[in-house]
Length: 106
Image 1 (cartoon, rainbow, N blue to C red):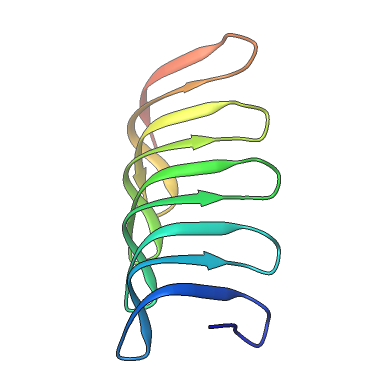
Image 2: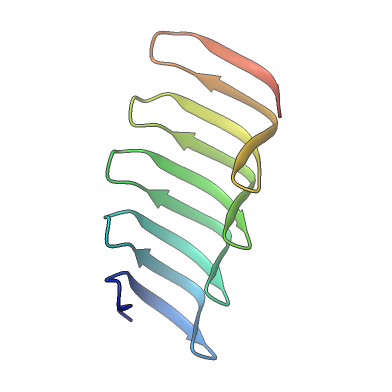
């Protein structure tokens, strides 16, 4: 299905909604591959952006939530807990210059 704004969803459907495994590509080039429930990202998925950033982890109601790994375009990496799209809980972040932080995030 192609939306009027140019975004495209390809995958499983139920009751005219993305439901099951699918791929959602936005007109800006960002892409999500994973599980959907009633048109929302739900469960495990991989999201990628045109600048090279990437998230691999879990979603609840369309938001990053649970365990995940986010890699920024500069190859900085955060791996740990997410809560409603934010790094929150236990995790660690490393930067290309060798710095690293492991602990709690709020």
